[in-house]
Amino acid sequence: MLEAAADILMPAPELASTLTLILRVRVPNATLRSWIHRGKLTPRGDRAGANLYRFGDAHNLWRAGDRDTDETRTA
Image (tube, rainbow, N blue to C red; front, side, top):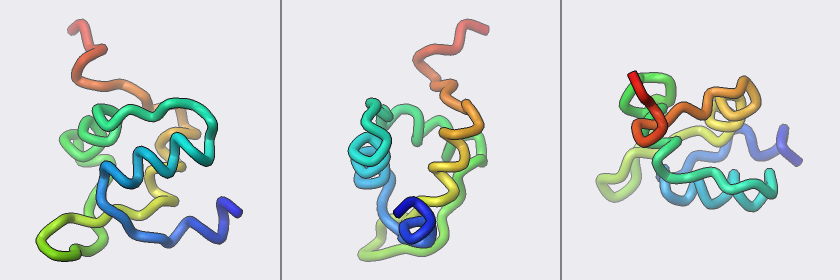
């Protein structure tokens, strides 16, 4: 199922919700905002002025353990 979903594009808030649903662990919107801010998650398209991100890219970042957010950084 994850392989089939890899190329689906969606806005960041929807992506966070989808990851949360599929992984059964809360993936905060702040995590995606952090990835976007740090250039680790880049837009792959747009719809009605909203950037769209690839599910597989976000899932790979999560699996790699990249869960640092602006709220959790101490340095």
